Amino acid sequence: TGGPSAAAVERARITVKLPPGATLYVDGKKSDRTDPVREFSTPALVPGREYAYLMKAEVTRDGRPESQLTKVTFRAGEIVTVDFTAAPGQ
Image: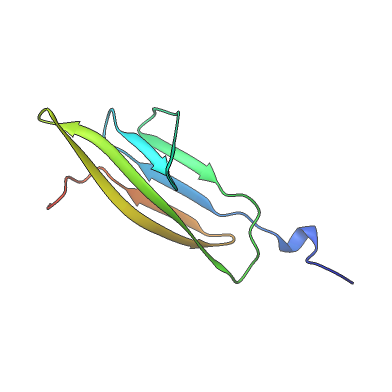
């Protein structure tokens, strides 16, 4: 009788690990939080569909700004960890 029930709608949980002082952008929007480990719950998701966020971490290393960009894919009910703490090329 209509759309999915409230019980059928789930969220995903995303944990992001960042180097100290890094700035995080999710789909182009700057996160105001500054802690090195950040946890996000997504809005309600439809089970069975794949979703994605584009995440960018910006940090200054040796006086030079660096950024890492990654596409994070997830589904309803998943727990995903994104680790930006490894230096590029390692």
